[in-house]
Amino acid sequence: MNSRDVLIQPVVSEKSYGLIDENSYTFVVHPEATKIQIRQAVEEIWGVKVVRVTTLNRKGKRKRSPGRWMYGQRGSSKRAVVKLVEGDKIELFETR
Figure (cartoon, one colour):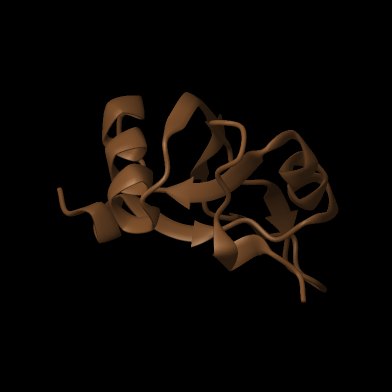
């Protein structure tokens, strides 16, 4: 798997931006990506050193269609929280 295929997009939320102070960054990753592949992708793309990778699978929520008795489901996703070595940072997340 290519490094650009492993990392799908960064997670933009209050909680993920709060983790930046602890030098941790959150990404949506490919569902079949392993921790080793995620570590290698981040190190290759941004040239930083990764200390730890934590992954979590998020199940999609069940939602009801408005005005109908039909139910659908949002897509499931896999996320990774990547902690970097002290002093390294990813410029993508930095605010101006």
